[in-house]
Length: 248
Image (cartoon, rainbow, N blue to C red; front, side):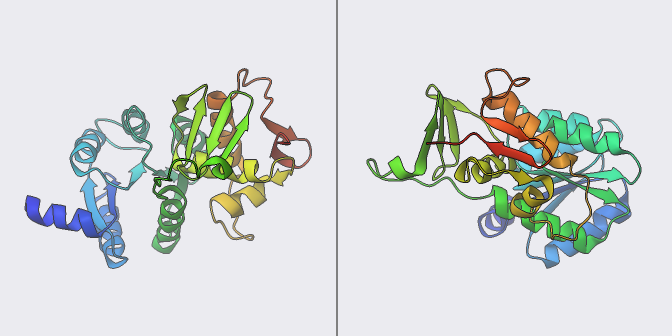
């Protein structure tokens, strides 16, 4: 592919990096995602995934956990050093620890192998919808209604940015979407299933490990709370789920 074609594609399509050491999976996902209108680049091991990521600047990354040279965890760490690009990990059916580790390192969602391509396509669409909201430029003097301040934390919902004492806190797209849900409904408790429906767009009857929510809450607390072990902003609603402290 020439640079000219790559640039054209980048301008018109969202780009997805698929990294998996199984050639059959790469081929299937590349074919199906292209049919959905995405531009797709691929890698067959972790080192190549990092190299392709740096060159292609994708809008979303799909990573297999078990890859040669560098596993999916290592790739996630490398990407998260500089980028909040959404990451979906592909993980084995029975290994819960793989899923949790991937999420703790910064992945946004996971899909269990063996998986239905339609399921993965749905996850891709949902994650991109929730994370690719572009930061908008709002005219000076018209931002007050979009800015929520609580203590030293300032949340700009228009620009999807968070600050502590004027220092920006980096959040992934899914972290911000979760925070936005709780902040916009401060004082209201949400169950884990409700959060999965609102933020991850999972249907009510979809069965998934709700620890996806727990891990993202933990990540948010580590970034926002003065003492994550004794949170004052994102509270646990015992017997229900989570809530943001009431903002008056």
